[in-house]
Image 1 (cartoon, rainbow, N blue to C red):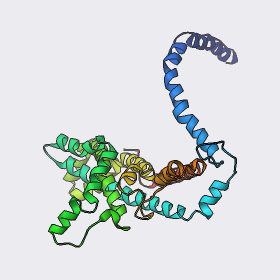
Image 2: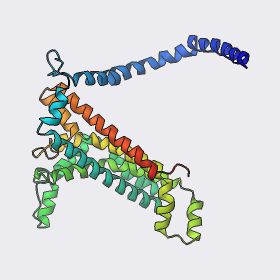
Image 3: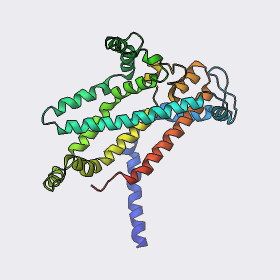
Image 4: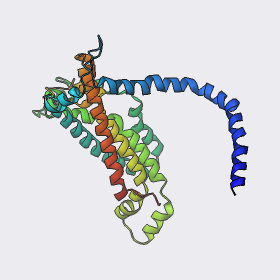
Length: 308
């Protein structure tokens, strides 16, 4: 047995050497531009960000090592940090719940249509192609003082104006904009999963007297739960990084009512030139994303079914 194992190793060694002399080097040559790009624009910035979070670098000049001072300041003396953290969590929870619920509802509705399914998929997916900055500018014009919404409310004689100047409603305007831009992706994703549910299961349940709600709750929803889980995880990650629409529509205001971690990183890094402090906020956001993702993976054991 040992001799046979040794013989196999002896035969595989020359083959691996040939691979690295021939096709292997050719493959590496063609992959090299991509690998260099990954190292320069992904790995190197990540490593630099870790190092900068322990310095007081102000963009110009030499970084000075300050240890954990940025993190200590963040959690103990920064008066805006916990407001920013609360805004980020609030946006993520509300946006995530509304996005998943509306996407699933639209996907079920499209799936029930006899004709025009493809057209409705395209209609709901189109905003996903639109640049988020352009979407945010359009919605800012609608929600701003004297905009379309104010005109509509005035026509209806409702005392409702200046949404983006209202500390309570400004975040709701950002969430509506985000939903309009991002709901199409999950809708198409869930609709494709619903179409993959075997019709024989649904037909058998129908013959046994199951109602439409029973077929959805007990058959279709468990069978699409892996797709639902994927959509939930990806939506949570993107919502924690929200920045574009806040930058365009509110600049974090009024006050700090719509400032999130993503906007705080931009504000501290590129407006106040506190690159070390901004890097520390970025790593806190990374830790928050990892914690929420780990929680979702832990909870998925209770509701995701892979044995369909």
